[in-house]
Length: 126
Image (cartoon, rainbow, N blue to C red; front, side, top):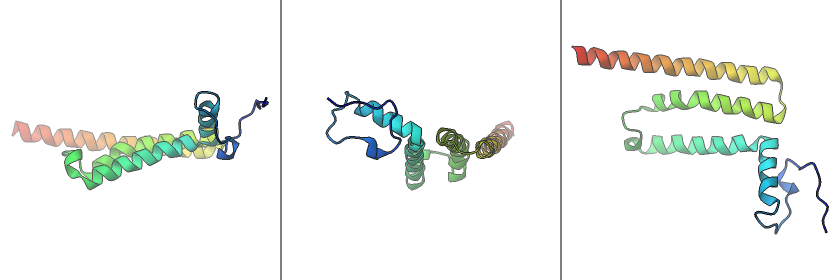
């Protein structure tokens, strides 16, 4: 019988080949993904793929321009990167800088939306 360690390795090498899903492999993999911060990398890859699809097929993004898509995505990307710094034990200054960047991108997005709404209301009232 195998003894299980109380500490799970944050690397992929900690997984044993042939473990059945549902025993401990799935939980160990998720724990390793979170401890190493790789879960954020997986999420960021999905976001990049989403932006690439929207860039490749303009009909999918409707009236949104690519700069609008960037304004929508940038704050969330910065928040995910900030979370990754916390998960991986990076310095708090890096986390604070990424949170500040998320706030700046959020303000940029809000100001773009307000200007767009003001332009639309000017066109309808004229």
